[in-house]
Image (cartoon, rainbow, N blue to C red):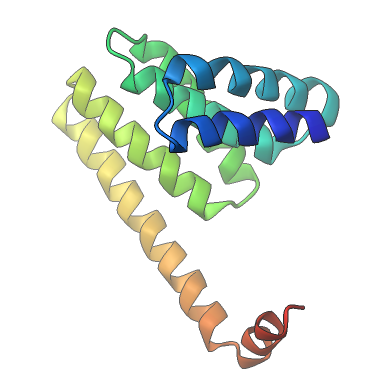
Length: 143
């Protein structure tokens, strides 16, 4: 588990520091394989798939169908875990991918509408959390 997390963090840091996707992708791929085969850490698998799918999407001449498969798998895992921030990130990348592919307008509009609903759901969760004074007090105390 620690090795998978370290590889994920290393690959992500490489991307954030402006490193080449070619350097980050192998680290993220190894993290994905380890998280999937040894750890059964679905959140790490979902995040790895999302990042790799986005790298493939950003790479000129990237395989858009491979990116689509990875992003859809990441979204499915994130949805099963009720991880709204991860779902929103995947949907944003999927929207971009469908624009690049030139998908039909109805498909893009449906995805945009779904993204908007999920964003509203996330805003509701944040508002409820902020309104829960006991929870805010616990978070403020660090517990």
